[in-house]
Image (cartoon, rainbow, N blue to C red; front, side, top):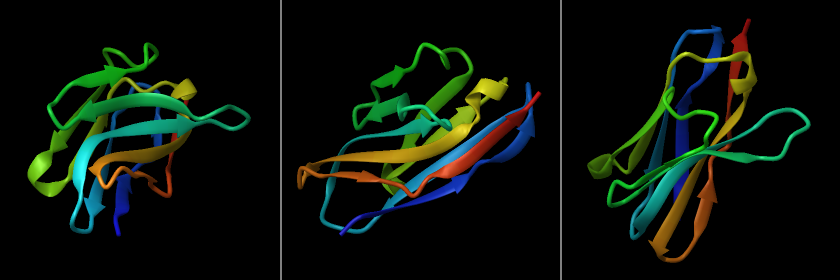
Length: 117
């Protein structure tokens, strides 16, 4: 069994920074990719950024240049560094884990990010 432990988030002013962290706890699994998605009120959940076990990254166009995703493989942890935050970044951010062995997908419980103008 795998579970995700998220930390970070909170309320900041526009232009400020936040860091989100997500650690995959458990044993007997092999990670394909980890990432972050977000869901704003009244909107669908959308991709923010993902990173594969090999280090390949994908970013939503809306966050390119402001947000950086990275991994600490030895700790099965993914970090999301968010700079120059905007009010439109306000959402619940969810950690996502894709496994190769076994072939499962997991979601974190979500952490709120609120950016005030």
